Length: 245
Image 1 (cartoon, rainbow, N blue to C red):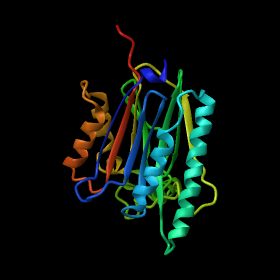
Image 2: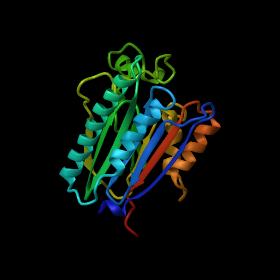
Image 3: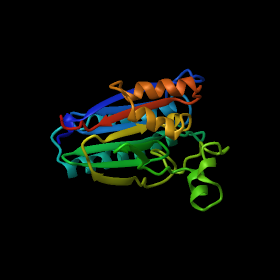
Image 4: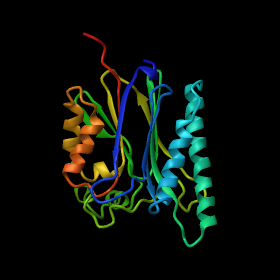
């Protein structure tokens, strides 16, 4: 199961309220790397942050082994974190130049997912969808300590407050990781929070499950726009084709 045999699609839109798009993506089935980054800090600053992440990952060389690829992704995100902090300090005036990131790597029969912030990764397997990342956000911490219910998190007034990001005011950035084995028929979705905070979980699952050959990201973006998504919205879908009958 080579990574270059995986199918993938991407789509992005600034949303119904914003004139600019601070989201970026990586869609590289040839090297087995996909990502979504959601910039923070306002126009230009957010674009700089997410753009630097996507450029760093998009330029990874193709000849890396699985362990080398994982190490290179970590290293490039860490280097970007330091560069963004230096640029923010240079600009002064409490400038924020930061971005979430969720990155998906595939080699052979295995995958790994790394992330910081509240951009998410989902896995649809055997008709059931689950979120495989866990948000680095204030509301997630409130859910974890029992202060609010999980079903109330998306509508919480501080739902947009993230606690970890590339370029944030922390010395060393820690990327969380999940890994596992790929299975025939798996579908993975990477998305910025504009999608998952606008389109209900069950609706996302249904559209991934019943895409009828239509690339899921375009369908998902259209659903978010129908629901008047106010944030930028980006989706990358990765599919492991089933063996022919």
